Length: 210
Image 1 (tube, rainbow, N blue to C red):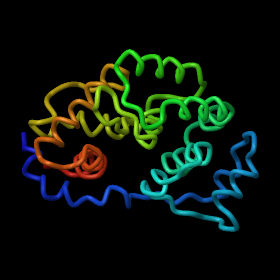
Image 2 (cartoon, rainbow, N blue to C red):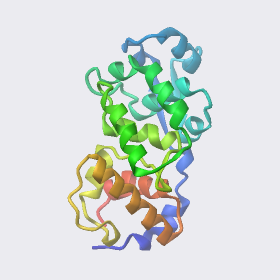
Image 3 (cartoon, rainbow, N blue to C red):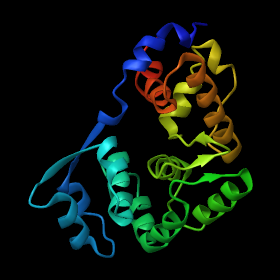
């Protein structure tokens, strides 16, 4: 296996905050949820298409708008089935949750309590709630929360780098805790940000053979 440290220079140069997604208003007009017109006007204005970057989402202060922006950035084509619609039906509950938890460093017990709240929201899976944790800058035991979607799991399971080990990854809470610890360890070792390692996994490790 290769060593991820050999690509430290590349990872360090990844412009993480500029990573963006283009969202067409037409796609989101098909999704039904409360306050739909108000929120779409707030985000799209008079545009039929917008581009959202990580930086824009991180800088957004309005919790409700930020939640919508995360969903649009993460699922520009509207996601699978009615998952997004089901999540948006609990938008006020999510606003209350992140009003309390945003920017917090959680002990593991509090993190598990938070996950139990997520489990009570239909359609809200680990791919989505880890995006929420990331953009609301939540940490667990001083480890920065990162996105842990199916693409990241697929990337990890390619087992191309010594530092990532030989583990067979699946999407669950225990694996997530192990994942953010791993990214923290790797990022400290090569002097980069944890989300730069995440972006490297998403783009390069997944689509390149090293």
